Length: 77
Image 1 (tube, rainbow, N blue to C red):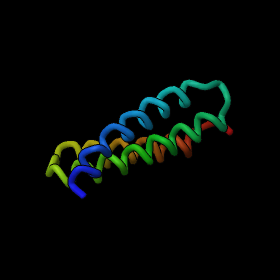
Image 2 (tube, rainbow, N blue to C red):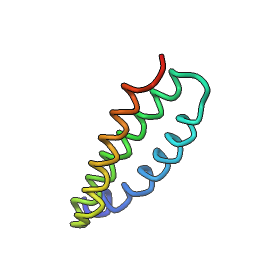
Image 3 (cartoon, rainbow, N blue to C red):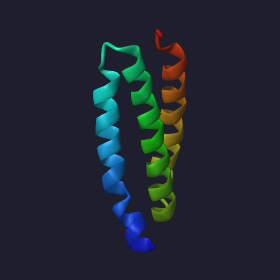
C-alpha cells in the first residue's frame, strides 16, 4: 500500500499540469473543468501529504482548493 501512495505524487502532478492548461482556455466550460481537475489534484496531494506527514503541503492544498472552488463560482459562464 505504501508504494501505491508513494506513486500517487506522479498522477497528482500530471493532473495539476493538465488543470493549469485547461484554466488558460478561452472557453468557460474548459476553465471550470480545469478548476475541478485542480480540486482532484488537491485531494490527491492531500492523500499523499497525509501519508508522508507533510503538514505544510496539506495546508497549502486546502488553501488552494478553496481558491479553486472560488474560481468555479467566479468563472463567467
